[in-house]
Image (cartoon, rainbow, N blue to C red; front, side):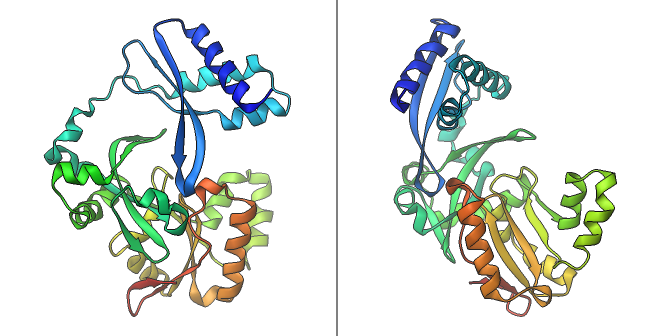
Length: 298
């Protein structure tokens, strides 16, 4: 079965299971780093919002032996699990006085998103770009956002700089930062029986800290939070290497404890090439935060 046949069959099967009151569609969704995915959406019972379920991964599962029946069941379970409990009134999006309290930013790679950046307001930041979202909701299951496009600015009669000033205040407030040491992460992964041995092995390893936001979604934007890196560097009494491990988090390493910049850069490139999905890569470059200049640089 070709991928196109798989998509057509899936639409018909899901539509048949849900009946005529549901509308099942597939759209080409452009994600981060110009990644194209096929997103299946189900609008039923007068709902105006639906979780997007990406079919690409399910086709891979089909090719590796999972039956179509099992896949359809998983799709419906995912739909039910992530379906919002009520409709979202997006009419407020036309009223800038209401929207502005929800403007946040995130970071994407500049070169890998050139086509997207033609369509959205953005600010160049090192080899990255700051882009803007309207945050609709945020809870333990994730965030619902609307990406802000150039035509929104024309409608609202605001500038990119004005968006940025709002986002600098809103983003740390709505998506507060979280920082964990690598030993904290190890404690979450290993049980008590293995923990002491692992921590003993880690004792001489370079200290590393994971910086993200409370949702662990697009948490790399925390490096733009005003005075945050300065505060962390002061507490660690060191300049910092900042390793962009993904769009969702960065790794902070005190500069005095780190290997050479070349070794760190090589490590980031290797991890991006082998461990991080194309959609989630932020950058192949390591950054340096100086306590003296209070600036992040490449």
